[in-house]
Image (tube, rainbow, N blue to C red; front, side, top):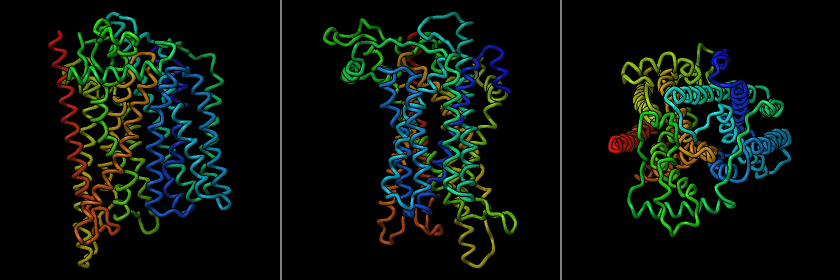
Length: 532
């Protein structure tokens, strides 16, 4: 009702609301498969725990990385609406294939399971970034034209409202997928557990297609007849020029309307085409400017990787941590430790409606800024909260290890799993700040013709973060397991494991990433001042 109320005031359209609902259903379908996939692989397919974990991690990382490839094609050759329609077919084919595989798995070779899984990945690669960019298109904002202060504030409100409620929509779908589908899969059956997400996805796509005549479909002009070739060539030129000039950084703003949160002009407008050398005249001015924009986003992109690594902990070590704690209510009811992942999404769903009405007014009092905080400040707050979450996780794990030693001495004491709630809630709050800020940042910092690539860059943070998390686990296991005893920090015996040290290690890396991020923001502000 709140969204509809906002829409009635003319801030976001009904087509935006429909697309947000469609995105929420997609998250329900995806989380309905992904959240409990490890359980399916270990209990039904009979994979080992390590093999199942690697399979899910690789699939998750690839799913987040594929949009980088599809986004270039979407913004160069295809339009967003057609991409959504075509990729949705692959998405549904993957879900349907997975459902069929679950029904016939006793006759199916294990390797054939990867076909429907990666069909889902390929379908999602075109579907998700295109859907979000297409939803933002419904705001009917012309970012290429200058505007007055009043018009700029109105555009800012529309963008901010859209991205906040977009994330609220996908968080609501994720919450339902994380909580409802694992219960159905574990208690009723996997066939039904995969059928429901498939039907939900088909229904949402049919609703999306049925409302085609209500959508705003922008036509973006390519910068040349061969945009991809020019883009790649422009990247090479920009890398060479940036390295030679040693000035790869964020561009400056000329006034307050140009701040990164809800700017009127993307970074591409800061580049003067007259500065491009004559030797590179075969590449269009716009292509080179676009390539420079992408390259200048990478410092911020890199500092966000540790944030993504931290978000790999709830489905892995947080769950393992909970299994070693008391997770029963009374004598019969057992709380599944994996169900605590819903606390993150629930925190998002609870905080998001209060963000504009409670959080922003408080921040206005603190910063004495009418807009509260910029997008970089918003992302920074979320990074700090994720850092605090790891500190809390380390302290709780230290307490758990202390109690486990008392148990070995014969004392009947137990640490409740509810002690894990603070670290889950902190991650949920950090999600509201950083992830929503990331979506705004990467969407607004690229030209209108490359908005899908901007969304894909945002998604790729979590893809690379997934692979980086796996690398850190392997590295830590190698170095801590070579002490002669054979036990690493990740020992199967939780009394010998030292997850607390690993959490402190991640907290330290997170702090380093935040300090670099803050330095980049400081450089940006200093550049703005010098320009003014």
